[in-house]
Image (cartoon, rainbow, N blue to C red; front, side):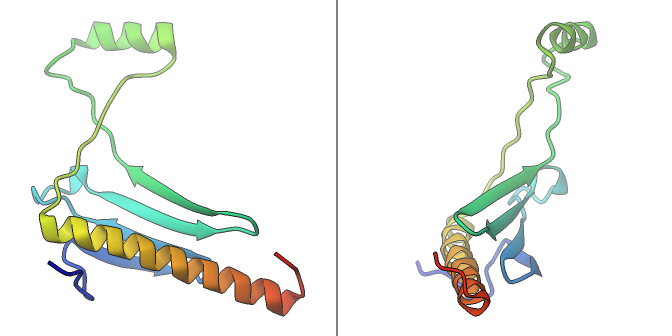
Amino acid sequence: MTPQPPAQGILGHGDFGDAKFYYVQCDCGSEECSHTIEVEADDMLVHVHLYSTHHTAWWKIGRWKQIWQILTTGYAKMETTIVLTEQTALNYSEVLKSAITDVKTFRDERMKKDGKQK
């Protein structure tokens, strides 16, 4: 298998030169477990941020236990999953590599133009 240029399961949804945003659709079809990726370059590093919506496992734990967990620990323990086909996973990795290269190139050109050294 090879990566697809119009990547199956991945939607580019913002390009600001030094930051790129992608929406990754879960293969189950629900938007509740999909997530957004941001690849961003600052003056020193490249950061990859993953944004997702978490849901409580309300069927496993009662509301009073959840309330007690928040009161005693300060947070509610939640998790999310995303299901990717083999092709989407390959596209995912290729999009990340490509976005990192693009934002680094943009950053380096901007720094060269501004006269800053890396």
